[in-house]
Structures are given as C-alpha cells and as structure tokens.
Length: 449
Image (cartoon, rainbow, N blue to C red):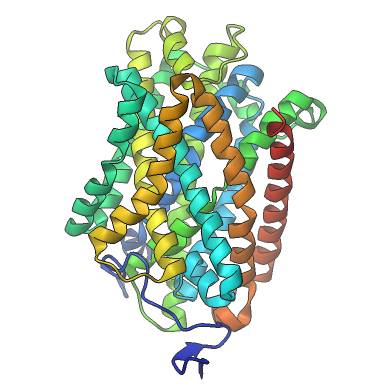
C-alpha cells in the first residue's frame, strides 16, 4: 500500500522515504529466472549469490582462527565451526528475505527507515567495517603473492587494487561471469585442501567426534577463547549488505507468491554455499590438527609459518604451493566480494548518481586506500596484528548491521506478508545477542593487548 511522503513522492507504508535507485543498478534484475518448471530448474537460476556470500566466511581472518584452533586443540573445535555456520545460515536467510521481500538491500533499508541523524552515522560505521574487511583480504592476497611468487608485501597490496578493473570488465559481460569467477576460485581452494588433507591422513574417527559438542570447550579457558574467536569472527557486517544486494540481480515476479518462492530458492542457494564454506573452514582446522597438533606444534597461527612448516610434515614439496594457491584464491575472492559490498553500502546509504565506473572507483578507493596504507606502514612483521585489528573493528561494527536486519525483517509494516516467521526472528535475535556478547568479550580481551 502506497502513502504520500512529506516530499510529495509516493512511498511504501512502514518506510520513512520512498525507494531510491537500486544498488548495483547496472546488474539489477539482469538474470532471468524460470517462472515455471521443476524446483531444480528454477533453483539453477538462483545459484550464485550464496557463493559470493560464502567467500566472506572463509577469508584470511577465519583461516588464522581455524589454524590456531586446530594446532592447539586438535579436532575439538570442529563443533564450534558447525555451530557458527548454522548461525550464519539463519542470518543470511534474513538477508535474502529483506532484499527480495522489501526490494531493498540492508543499506537502502537503513536509509529509508531511519532519520538522517541515525542513517549517516550507520553509513560511516559500515564504511569503516568495509575498510576493516579489505584490510584482512588485502593482507591475505599479498601474503599469497609473496609465498608463491616472492612479490614484496607492499607491491602485493597495490596489485590487489586492480580487482576493481576486473570487476568492471566482468560486469560488462554479465553478473554471471563474476559469479563464475568466484565459484571457480572456490573450486580451486577445495581441490588444494582435498589434496593436502589426503597427504595429512587425519584420524577420521576423531574428526567425526570433533563435530560433537563437549563441555571441555567451556571448562578450558584457552579453548573457550579460541571458540569465541571462531564464532565472533564468523558473521561479518559486509556479508549482510552484500547478500541483500546481490540477491536482487535476479529478475522475479512482483506478486507475493513469486517473491515467496524467490526467497525460498535464494535461501537454498545460500544454505548450500555456506555448507561448502563449512567444509573449507573444517578442512583448515583438520589440516592444522593432523599436521601441527599431531607433532606437538601447538602455537601455529601465522599464515607464513604454515607455508614453511607444512612441507616436512606432509612429506611433499607440493604442500606449501597448494597452501599458497588456496590462500591467494581466497584473498582474490574476498577482495572481489568486499568491493561489491562497498559499492552496495555507498549507493544504498547515499543514493548517489554517478557513472558505473566512477562509482566503482570511488567506493573501491574509500576502502582500499586506508587498508593499503596501514598494511604498507606496518609491513610484513605486523600482518598478524593487522588481522587482529581487522577483527576488532568488525566486532565493533557488527551490532550496527545485525540489529537493523533483524528489526526490518520482523516488521510487518515493512515486509507485509513476507515478514520473517516468528521462530526465525527469535532465533536470529538470540544469535545476534550471542554474537554481540562474544564480540564484546573478544574485544575486551584483545584491546588491552
């Protein structure tokens, strides 16, 4: 139902401002879906956005926590990876619901729902979160280039900025090409870890038992700390903006039934993709447990250290190369998705009108310049501290994204018949509260140091 806004333009009930131009307008609604046919034929048109989102759950920051957890406590923290993945699945389902049901990404929804004195600070916080995300991705890509090709860290950081031109070119071909690049790189990562795990020959009985909950995690302070790190670093603010935006690249009907089906298909897409992300994160932890923990090396967390130590432990000269390739692919994937998230945040909050190339360069510059500057300033010796810094900033920014998401999708005035089911709202609210508490705990422990 449309009502009249103060400016005289029509707006939807429940929103303070009318809907503006969509973010990623050059690819908005550009991918046709199937209105008829079997469930599987319809699903194929929706597969893609979930894998862009999954990238954010296996970024270099997640690698560091998984490596530390596996080297120190073996397979015991696999259950934490599973729980955190379930949390992510539910929250990303809300993102798909918001993007399709309200026709707004999370940034647009904040702009249209809150007064300017509230939405502008939210934009600033979101931009800071994008910079922090880029910080981790830039470091991961630069380390990957250094390990594989000996590229100096400072030069590797600058090379990562070129992804903006890659995305511009691929979006001109069609958004499906961007999705294909992401899926291909994810496939390379999966192959690399499959080979390394085969070489490591883990204790599969211990792996299976590792997915079962244990009270030892709560009793052991060191294990609890790492568990908090894994869960607290799971849901990143930029992923919430990204998913609610890229899901709108699909062209679906305007009826409630069409949107309801689109929400279901988009949720299946993200759920399958996030289960793939769980496999990758679990593989990192399993690899660390089967190599480092097994040989008594329990303090491994630096990505560079893994590259040096893994060859003699696995008995293969290829092992470090495979690890470096996986890390480089992970970093490249993450910088691409962070760039898209940055564009969604800027366009959604500010409703700017610029040519696509100018928008992309501007949004990328805002994120990459601070990240590159900080990385170059601290150099190779400070990469571990910078990864921690990025997680601290993301932890601080998380409530400003996750709370509005739960609020909007639970509001019938905004979502109408597509309001989230009550059980999903309560479960997501509990997850949001848990993540915020864990991040506060993590920040409390990290900041003094």
